[in-house]
Length: 119
Image (tube, rainbow, N blue to C red):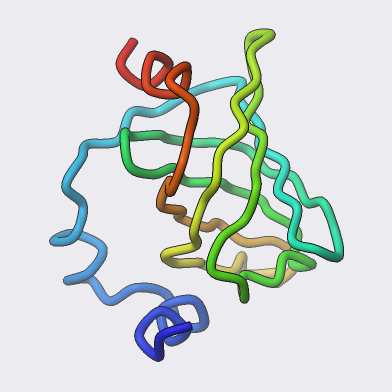
């Protein structure tokens, strides 16, 4: 893991990274959840927004390690399921410390994912 990514995962992104690096607009979504396997646990969270290149997952358990380069995730909602390969880009821990919000880059996804995000 690069030192920059490790620093972002621990401290959160710098404002410049958060605002300048996003190439694709994100759209808010309601009613979608995501389950991520990290090798030790399967953790779940709420998908708050998506784009063609990434997604934000809120309320992930603090059990999520965010130490691997990529993870297999299943995004589901409205009776649809999308298996995607994602990479953590930033995280923000909740004030209580028992959950976190994490931004992910989508590394690989089925064509149905592209259809979903363009609707």
